[in-house]
Length: 159
Image 1 (tube, rainbow, N blue to C red):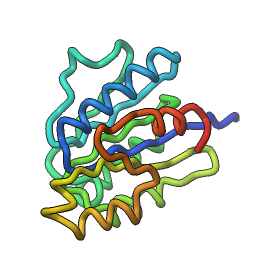
Image 2 (image 1 turned 45 degrees about the vertical axis):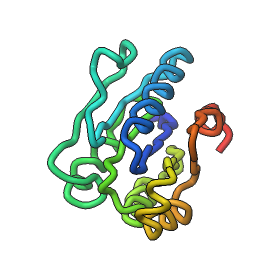
Image 3 (image 1 turned 90 degrees about the horizontal axis):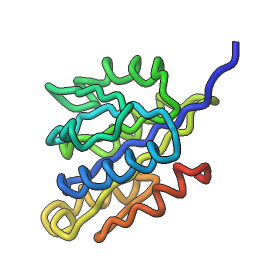
């Protein structure tokens, strides 16, 4: 039996609209490059279905945070994902340390795992502890204008 390599990328942070925009950019890029993609949507607002590229499968996880109350549903979803790429849109409620721990449990020799955090000035000012956590635990940290190129480079095979 041949195991297929998969990629898991979690997109988190407080700026909701920026997370949605980045996730859509990534989904359209993955679609354009022919990569089968599963979107696990635990975002603060669901991505509008009409904006998703064709053939992107979406699973909406509601009723809690993927780091704790929904971790039991997330882990089997990722483990059984038929797609080459899994994008996880994370709620702003997610604690960066808990998310890093969860992503660590999803590490596997056949799976690349990373997280990207969007960090804005409001988060730095109003929630400095949270900003420090994002800086400590995120694999990729994006600040305004949230250019997708570092994430696209990671998805392209770098990492």
